Image 1: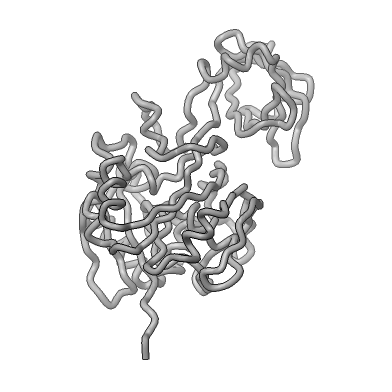
Image 2: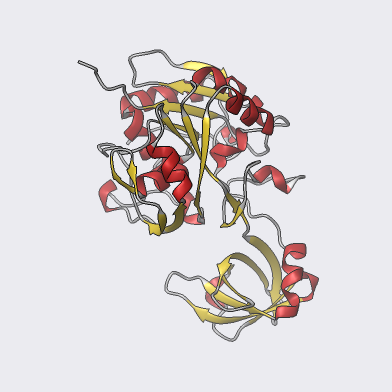
Length: 338
């Protein structure tokens, strides 16, 4: 695992005015020098027949603020449906003081009751059906914990192609795309496919296990459609995953080299150096925190020595890190034709 210290001031707090104006570092396997480009240069790095695969999930989680009956402040993050009308699985703070039966008064006159406590500390909250329309009005888009600035436009934490609701966090590698850039890629013959993976907040959880292989991956729901599987298996060029969530989805449905079986599943795949890639030839991703599973995935594509050089260069050259930061394009070593 590569090592580096990430200064606080290198974490981008706000998105750039122009999505495609972020920097783009191009990294091979170490045999070629690092290139420093701009994201809108991406068409010059792709070829007709290449296929980009994007996660079309949309952030639908909502952060609510309220009070217990005692007056104590409560914060709740609604992650997903609780399975019954009016119920939601939620992260709550402070959780230990919210047992079953506790009531929370949120803004916009929203009242919720804790009806279940889960082993991982999450709660199931129940709202009245009449109050459901107020949740979007009262709730804020949940930003990652390292973002301390409030967004003036919540849509900047959504990709321009987001469609399928269900995520607690955005697939941030896709935030750099604009409709104009997508149209330019299409015009030059670059194909596009979409998959869906609902990004959970555990995505940001660092690896705490002493041995990397002992790290427990959280499960994430993902979907591969018949159409996307056909596009991928019929691709004559390279398959480029836009973000680690797209890459995880593709490899989760792989049954051989460029052979996929479409469907829905909860994936716990853990991709790290030594992994035998079945589908993905290249990856566009942002710059990640130290000791994260995303960082290990990137290293499994270009090799850890090349990744260490890339991150050393990013820190030296002033690249912006994490969700609203800059990006990198890494590719697997080309197979020898001999």
